[in-house]
Image 1 (cartoon, one colour):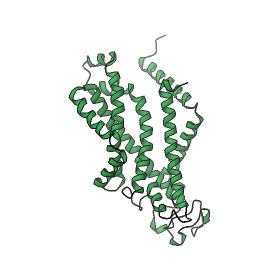
Image 2: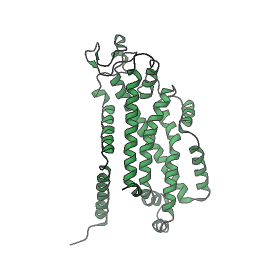
Image 3: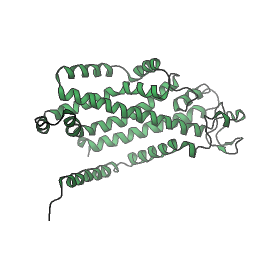
Image 4: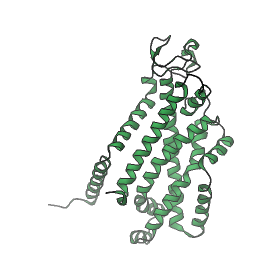
Length: 303
């Protein structure tokens, strides 16, 4: 009988690691519930045109007579406005679903792009060292000394309003976290024998960086990625609330909260409370999942 091929053995190892990860992650009921909640929110947000009773940003479908309907009121469209309506007659539940979609798109896009930029810069700095490392890490350290919200405000003011502009601003504001984490982990791996052996071969530098070095620095990056996605969602909501993010004509939890904040001292509590609750639940759930991922990936956290 022939032995299993190296590819098959490697696949079995990865499969066993995945099973162990899932098993360890499932030990926390809070994390499992949070993950299920995130998946449900993502489903209703990306399926908003199908599950929402109204397209809240189609002006032709809005009825000004439905403005400021209280939660549970039946509107002129014949359906119940479960979370009420706003000053333009928008169904709040529908607006929140559309706003969640925007939040997830911006958070996931900004997190993924910032992760790629940070990985490249961190690996290059740790691998080559010298002046390249000094220049990259001084820029990273300088950026980390500035509050992310302040940098994002300046960038959005320069770039302008819009989803693409906000994503770009958040990438610039967040890549330094990934670069610093990647550099710290890669610096430890850089001096190990397997990297020195790979460098002594005629393999291209890119292959050594991304095939040999990168897989060994991914665990801490996964944890940082979950935190930064939640941070990006919160930053976008903050920018929109301050009036420099997405305008009121585009779906956003931040713009919904800002619109309802004008009526915070009246009895129309639902205009800002419900979008704020959904934003809080989303950010907290992502952070709880990230905390459990950190516990699983870091042996020192396991008990």
